[in-house]
Image 1 (cartoon, rainbow, N blue to C red):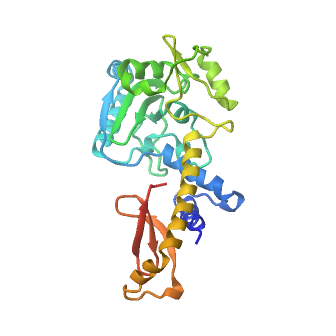
Image 2 (spheres, rainbow, N blue to C red; image 1 turned 30 degrees about the vertical axis):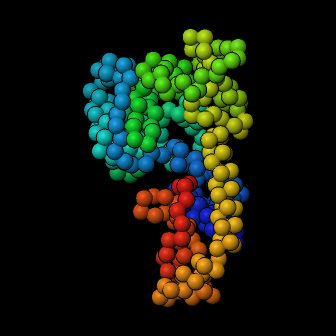
Length: 294
């Protein structure tokens, strides 16, 4: 049994029902899987997280107008309490086909400092000021606050320097050692190179650092997502092999469940209570196994 089409049934359902993508038939399964992974990378799963601030944040916060300071405080509270903070993101975050080069390159999300919402949109109103931050599983690192109209707001190498100055341990694994330091690009050059699908390193104090977000492909998509898609396809092949090797014991076990009809055997993917991707037998609702979440 090939489980990959079953997985793609879930992916297509999520893209159409939750993300209003109506043209899934125009794309290959590989493209649709990447679209779903793109949403995973851009959107933030609600859960309580510890906030860790750089030495730039407090001094920057007091210089912005009061309404933006208030929005900062609201966002801070939502992060600490595990509430949904996606409305503070770019409106493009929920578009499966739109790429976020700042995130792919440097792992940095940008949040609009505005908590006003007229109720007609999932997203809050746009803001003159952005909070730049790294979101991890249990922590959010506040890096800097910048004006949205700054033409270099998404390519400032200063963010990497702030990370290096405040949390040097986070940069150690990305230092490129044993080679001559490459060219030092300007922020504007990095913007143009990203647009052309050319990956760059950042040079700070004569040390070169690889992209902490995993980097961009030549097509401008996420390297991390491409690797994840490949891993998922390998997992589906392993799952298919496991099923073929364990089919009879599994069927014997399912036959003990009231209402099970072997002629109507049907597997579907969904999510277990802990949000892990899981394979179920549809008739019985029996959980067959859990896998890494997509």
